[in-house]
Length: 154
Image: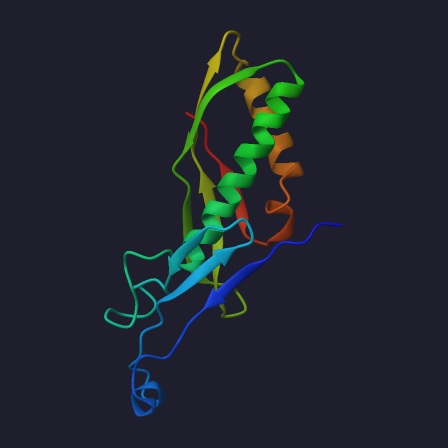
């Protein structure tokens, strides 16, 4: 069994009466167990500026990034197992947040758009699709969410 730690740190900088009125900064830090700390904030589309920080990473972006990152790492492993050498991999993943049929707001769909360059032999379209399917099936993060994850290849 593996364990993962993320430490979220936020401190009130506004007067208590502003907190009660919702007029306070939600900017915070997210520290990971490997030593990296990033600025965090809600998306300005959820909490308007100045109570959010558009330059910080929001939870929805972290979810999209986690799905994309896990898919890439699993894809690299699957490609290696069948003898393909990946020279580069770039994905501009996009998430969509909307109301669910139950009326809750959720990231309901994440579309991965990987652009992959192979060194040497490259898989044909069917083999590439099979690699993406295998990567999706084995991705720990995709297996952890109910969000629809779609892979669009060029």
